[in-house]
Image 1 (cartoon, helix red, strand yellow):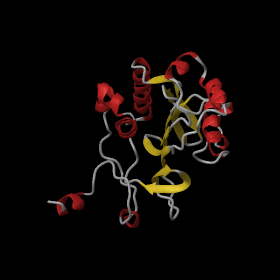
Image 2 (cartoon, rainbow, N blue to C red):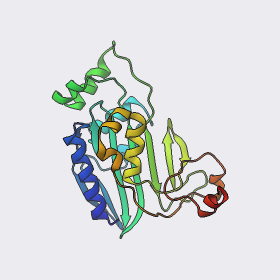
Image 3 (cartoon, rainbow, N blue to C red):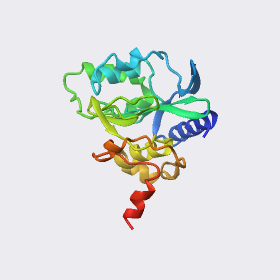
Image 4 (cartoon, rainbow, N blue to C red):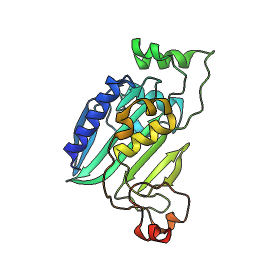
Length: 232
């Protein structure tokens, strides 16, 4: 899939999320040039890496900073953020950031329809009578250049920034959407055909190291042929 094809796919998905009232807001998809990298990402008021890493992972502070800086592809009607960003060098995939960030509060969906999300989060944060939910973001990161020990090329963050759960392959838009809606929104998953039928990509380079396969890991994409034969 070329960068332009992927950008079109994400635009189509965001449009369907809005039209089906699954998402309350979506940002335009842009192509951002960063040296040799072409990044397919969301339009934001702050593109600096500092905006992503200035706050502790999985905190109210981090969630609010993402909302304030428009660092998301879409906001769902429960206030959860969805981030979808892919990096290319030429036509070769070089990285991605795919994050589902649940809202720390149980927000009334009707308020999201009528009030700016930033104002709502400020209102809920300042209230002494509203509980903060302990919910971890789920973020799939990929960096083709990353070969550090203990830092898999493709990994999933849960609960802390130091948790890097190995993933076998780069994650497609379809796999990410299936993961989010099948597991966290089963009613929406059952109600909308486009969520269940969103296409996955074909064969991709396997990035997981041999030693990482001996541990618990997340498997996606095409399995190793020898593993399939052993199971016969």
